Image (cartoon, rainbow, N blue to C red; front, side):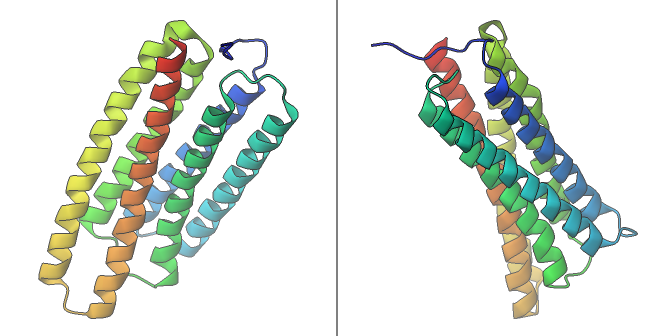
Length: 210
């Protein structure tokens, strides 16, 4: 049975995926700054992240539109869709975390929230570093190394999330505040989960075409 292979002849899908990870990286950096720098206008920063999320949507739409126009794709069609949708979901949760902090008029982010945001940034960084290696088989080992790192980061995020939940229920005296922080923590943890899904998709492509 014939199988599509990675080839340098059509680079546009790769270009779009790399633009997507770069856009995610910018948004994740903005989120960390938003959480850690109390002098920033958080509403303005959340609006910036929203624009980045909309740009991510545009990239996803371009990938899908190109997929429908292409007879031959550099990687299997289901892998293109999987990567595009999972990347889109990571950024959706980054934007949701920023929006939640502003919309609910929450106070200074907790240390756990900052820690989770930094893990989200670490995941985004590794994805951005890994994605260009999809163009050449000889670089596939770098993708697999990044996937292992992202898996470890997701496990770390799980541990931080569980600790944050425990601390929240132990120390929070206002039920509404508990609900707000729980939602924020969940958005951040979901971002790392989806980042791991991107890594799993990349790993699957590598193993399929190795």
